Length: 548
Image (tube, rainbow, N blue to C red; front, top):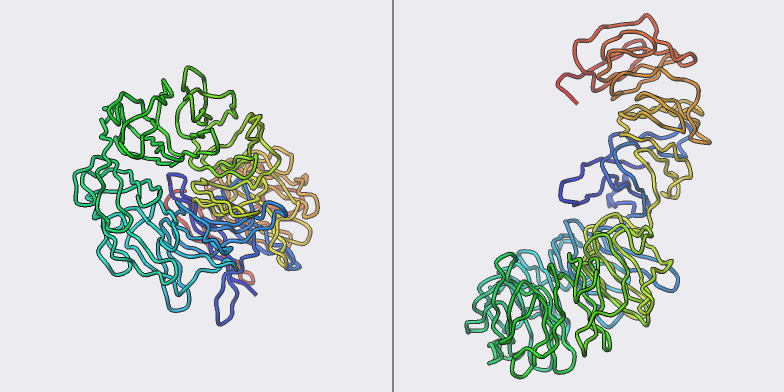
């Protein structure tokens, strides 16, 4: 036996779990095999034989549960997700032993320990309760160097120590080291090369020195080195440094600037790691900001919100020659921003908020041929933003604000196998929200806001075949939303905000013949919306008021 509950989706594309199946036992564990929708649920009803769970709400996809992070085996397609509560995973790195370090804005209780915002995911995809720096706010970037994990973000305390926006954590103990650059504002980007930790962000003072938006910090002392490129901000953009990547003796940076390293540079530049001076590398005419950057060989991949660079049309993604600064012919054509990169062999993996790559549907995650720019068949189909990627061997870790991957299209109504938790083929495809479901034998009654369902035109109420999902001939044709359905013998009781249903003028509450679809003479004539119904014996209890 299982319990379920529903929740709603908050704005700004932040998706929360809308269907959780919880075992009624002493552990109260979430049954993670059950698939979840990507939007709110309003009704959950079992079939007459208990083998199927029908769900209705406002969603367009149902898929396996994966809360903000998931590891996928590139060879087999197998996946596993740690259990997390929160909002997002923003950054991930491999731990070198089959696990991962993740940062973002999340919490999870493991035994008696609450882990927040920075965690170690073990090889079995559970969180390591013994490794818990516990920063008091969001972690936006992490970089691993030897046995030290550098973390940047919005926090001011981590590991029980005061650390403003930047800290170093021992990967074995989870303890914060004495390294303390003490930035005066947020740090967004990190890269480590040799004895220097390169940092970019919104700060003006770091490592005991005045440094505007970018600095190199001694990895031992935490003091700023003499390396100081200097940044001039652009009036139209935030002046922070959003990306840093190291290649040999060059430090590639991106952000909202008009000059850096003593030269005019438009949002992207290459800096000498010794002098801090800008090199001759200068991609021209970048018309918007960059949110992700990856260097592979002689290619610099960039992703963001731009549409042109180097005189070429490039939608949100581009490849630049690391020697000449010229834009290459590689052109995948993404319809929305790219926020993360990873590369394996000749394949470039991208994450973001997009839904199309080269004209093919790809939701928030895709794999692209590094030579041709063609999208591959690999398609995890995340149900919301993917903002962090990392690869280790044959495994890739996706982080973001998604709650499900490998989902299938289902519009507002679906059927889930009660034993396996997976989606059934049953697909009535309602063109509007479902507010109520009731089941009688081989018939599923569905009510809501739709005008089409089961392949037929139906006004807010329909009867569906449990085998095919097709609408039957039963058609009361409500003139308003159906919010409640209750069954008694050969009568279907409906509540909602309608004033005409079953061929008669009836307000808010009606009884419909289950064979003909015609309203009976029963008419309580309610004077406001009906929001809930319950039948007990020969008595029907109703409640409502307000508006939908």
